[in-house]
Length: 181
Image (cartoon, rainbow, N blue to C red):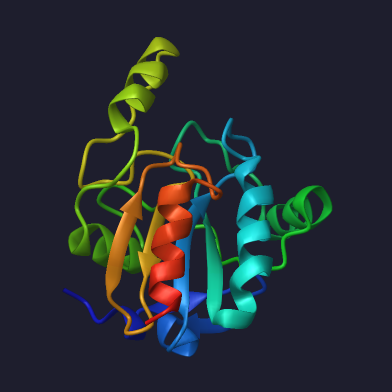
């Protein structure tokens, strides 16, 4: 498996970054989209970020257009949408695939580290099928707003289904437990 800290990343403004640049922090890595039924989760993600950032927590948003073409915008449009509609101040990164054979290296490493997710996966799959959509099976990312929790030591310690909201007690408890380490 790739060393997560060394995987090259690019911020939405073009600046280079790596997870190593966030060393010692608890990270919630989320693939995001602007035109998804789950898009309102941006509000909860921002609230989580503001609540815990002073304790060494960051949300890292990775726009992806993998699911129903729900992130069609340019980097500038995505950034503006997030700031204007949800006041997003956590870091956003360049749009790139998070599933399939061309997925970005970070997501290849994340899904290899934790191949299954917690949360209501089956119910979500059934709802999507009712809309004529086909969500991915594990180990692939199921849909927009799937969440990976990375501990201060850089290890992937949790993976949460897209429908698990940022204020879900299971997710919040996992974040708080990592922050105490």
